[in-house]
Image (cartoon, rainbow, N blue to C red; front, top):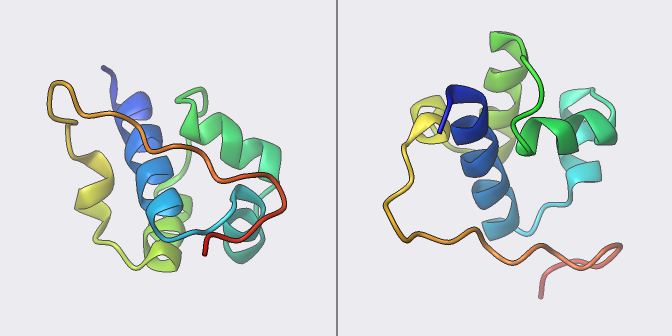
Amino acid sequence: MDAKKIFGWNLRKARVERGISQQALALEVGIDPAYCGRIERGLENLSINIMEAMANCLDVPMAELFRIPIIGETMPIPLKAGRKKN
């Protein structure tokens, strides 16, 4: 798994665990929600400033967003569109 995919995997995991939508994260960071989705899929090269803003928004150390997933670890189930996690 390359660095973009690792970052995206961990970003999505942290975001879903906190019940934050892609749209809310994108709004907080100041990026387009579609760009946020492409980051999570490991399709974008992003600046360190955006990485830092995302980590701060999710209240996680930036290093956690580069953690290599454990073999067999599964991605969390996506949040339902337009709904907040209860």
